[in-house]
Amino acid sequence: MQRVTVQYFDPSDGPSFEATYRERHVPLVKAIPGLERFTLTRPRGGEDTPYLVAELWFADLDGLKAGQASEEMAATRADAETYDVARRTMFSGSVEEV
Image (cartoon, rainbow, N blue to C red; front, side, top):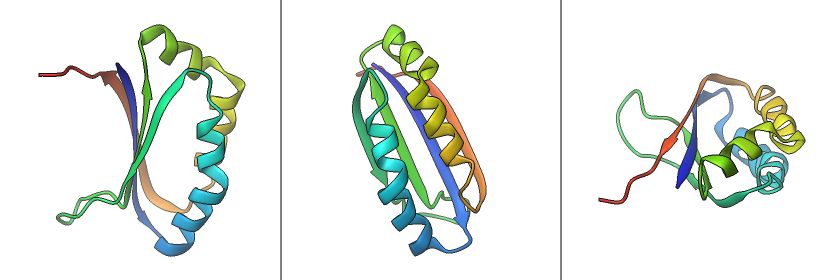
């Protein structure tokens, strides 16, 4: 499995951010080709804990690459840039069952 993780930190208005994210961004993510699973987490923790974590799961590296190169991913990235958050961190990698 391959996973893309996006962490959103300190939105200027948390409830508004989350409502807009769910209404506008979630459908964009779900349209990405090759996407197998999409999860959202509202972490609890310390001072540097993200407000929201999105995880996009793909079956393999080829699926991830195809999804990343798609028009749907481009639209998703463009939408992500519009959110008023202190910072956004994105990374991807292989997931290993242990």
